Length: 251
Ligand code: ADE
Image 1 (cartoon, rainbow, N blue to C red):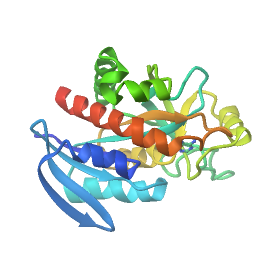
Image 2: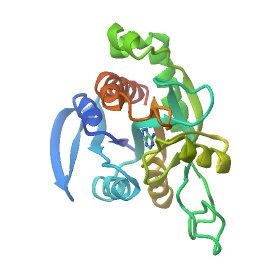
Image 3: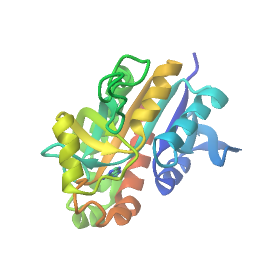
Image 4: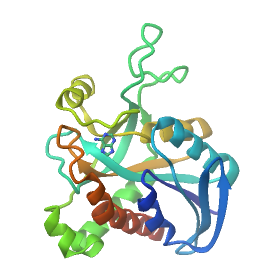
């Protein structure tokens, strides 16, 4: 079957960079969202800004599946680091996704997805392996190649790839207390963001293979807001473009 890859990004500017990779573009507007259909490296792709939070991302992901018949879904964006050893500029590729703010106790256990009998949604092993390979290829060429020497110096970038679990919730985490609360309950989580687990649930229910790639922009503590926007403009946009381009090159 011919692949038709859905690519979602959590930041508008970040996804603008990815859109720039498309050729033979057509724009489609549905539900206040712009979907750009085209080709990257000869592979059919549909690129869209997910918008922020779980509900918004659910709508966008569902539209990608229902209106554009995507065969795979790749989500890229930034995240706050929870795991020790993760630093700004590192890249996390998802193993599993969980909603850290889902709690339907006492009916079911904490974090369990209602009627789905599970807490975690697994990302697709082959898409995840492919994403990891793409990131490794880029890191082998040096971060400078992706973002330029100045940004590497400014953000003290020395990126490494991590595979692991990602938690999503409808909150920007920027306090030591909240960060610790999530870690106490879900100690294996690598990083926290606001969309991945929602997209994962859409993909689970529609049977679409997916993976989530997150660039660490902050440490989800009291420092989390500092330089966030600057990081997006100077680092995350370029990383996203390079990573998506390399994934599609390897498909
Ligand atoms: N995305 C990037 N950083 C984040 C944070 N600290 N919390 C939630 N989502 C994020």
